[in-house]
Length: 292
Image (cartoon, rainbow, N blue to C red; front, side, top):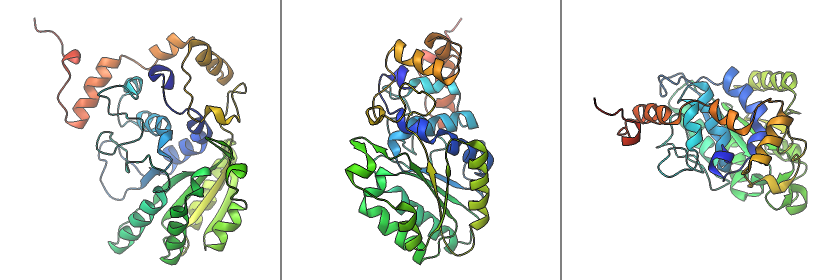
């Protein structure tokens, strides 16, 4: 996606891809055909610059055709650089400015309880994002109001745009901080799928017991591409060239060229037409079949 757009953030999406995929495909109650039906769960990616991850999950879950992913960050696309719930089916919360996701999760969780709804609120945050003071106000409030329908996940890769998180503004011990605020805390390797499932099982079992729950997933930025791993410069640098993308594909285990990878997503204009139909937007002229 960042190759096609020549812009975007690849580091965070590859850091969080394993555990968010496990969550979204195995635990989250979402229905692409009936997005607002209850019981349902909410999924917030608070670090909204990781929008490529959000859109990839939604497309593969069936909210829109994967071919539309190739319009990422292009003029007129519903897949903006930061998620917009009014333009993308399946995006529950618009995001971008860091530090807001936990507060929104609190409002959703508290409101859900007051209305007697069976809803779980999932929120993903970056570890660097937790340097925002507003996060800790929300963390404190959720514990106070016993929002035990919240499961927060921290992408704990110790990397942010300016360098190592612990050097820019040290937050350690993050587990101790959450625990001192009254949260139930779990930790695990965010790239070991067996451990991810084990920790997600334990965290879900702890929900509904009077305390909000958080998982610290230990991760690596640009995971799966050893040539680029654990380097903060990939926070917002796209895989913009054929050489960059070929390195990524090869090291991720794909035996294909950048052009073959692009072609595997399907026909873009057909996907664009279907996306507009889903959103109730006019079908673009470029997608219309010429009249006989």
